[in-house]
Image: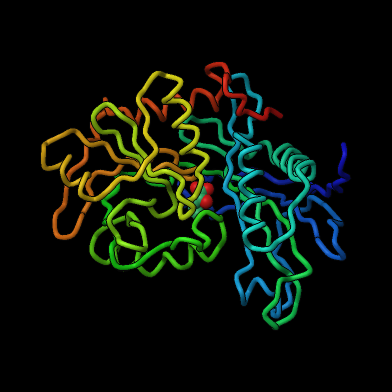
Length: 349
Ligand code: COI
């Protein structure tokens, strides 16, 4: 073991039934924590889950220096545990940290911490197709100082929570053309807390009008699709899997990337490009079969049943033979080890 991680386990505990508990409400029994100060990482440890002691002056509380990842572990058909796409999540974590002027975590420490924590809480990983252990690595600026500055002290932590379906029914979404999630040159591609907090208000307005989520458009002209709240946006139209290209304002989603690779590998036509509202409206108006879905670690594949663009609402195809469900099954098969991992995505404990 390259990194020394002290492990203090709970004397004993039983794993509660978390199936009907909302996403992210129940943490597993343990958590990982390490401290950054004087230019290095120290005191890496796994301890029983507990509240933090943090100065009210901590910079993360005032200026939003926070970055997180969302990952998942699965029980494979042979009983072993698989942490999915550790490398890609680590790379994205580092990019987000760079954007927020926060120190990187060495890859060995990230990997070892995750390996050890998921091993300690292995009993918490649900063994079902629609279930997994959600893993939340995150970093916060912990230095107590109210002046606006890049912090010199941070906490890197990992917490976990058993996860079932994030969305239990197909979504009604509204194309957002007034508010913006991210503008060119902003932090849209970083997984930083502020991107999510800033989305609450427009999402709440949409919810008040009966929608489940918004579909963000570009901040400049509001004429093409960017991503959906908490997920990347994907479409299947004219035998083609379509998704907005990584323009710098949307998140480089790991589920997005996995579905694109799986589709390409299966010989499907795949396009990453600008998707305009006009083009979507034209497809609906022409009576084409339009599949639309969100792709994300928490949401996996979240079918969209209707899209409101301006004053018109268009119905999407969500029948059981839709291609999005096939893609989801193919992804589940790789993660659960039902098929060979030809992509080299699985980190098996
Ligand atoms: C994820 O899908 O992992 C996310 O981070 C989205 C959301 C739960 C915040």
